[in-house]
Image 1: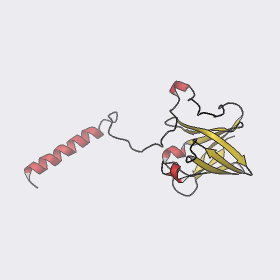
Image 2 (image 1 turned 60 degrees about the vertical axis):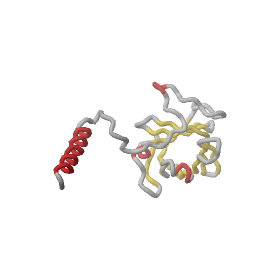
Image 3 (image 1 turned 90 degrees about the horizontal axis):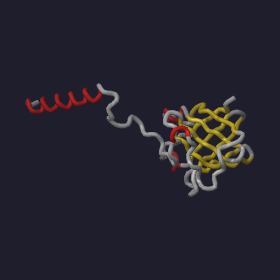
Image 4 (image 1 turned 45 degrees about the vertical axis):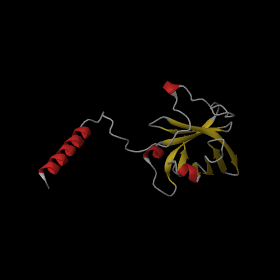
Length: 155
């Protein structure tokens, strides 16, 4: 290796080492969170509801992430939860980023259909099995980093 190449390699190593030594410095994302169809609530304010969306009020049942359905899941899925309101509204929460996905659901014979958007490509199907809710996303949502998973009803 020539002296110039060694000097360049050493300089690159030093820049890398200095960047890693300052955790507050922006160096790039470590993982990509799922895209949000709504913005997180600013300072505790609820996000605006999609057109025709029932309000997120009234009796509700919460389901906390319990495990993957078939594949490993990302860290943000592992700390997510579904809140199903009796009026047909639902919210999918991703805890660390406060990402919130809203929509409507309908339940028929132990199956649940989740609609995340008006165009029909953002939806999921669910199955209730006792205290467990199994959720499977469409290919469009899976390509946007939504993970099929099992959720357990919260006491």
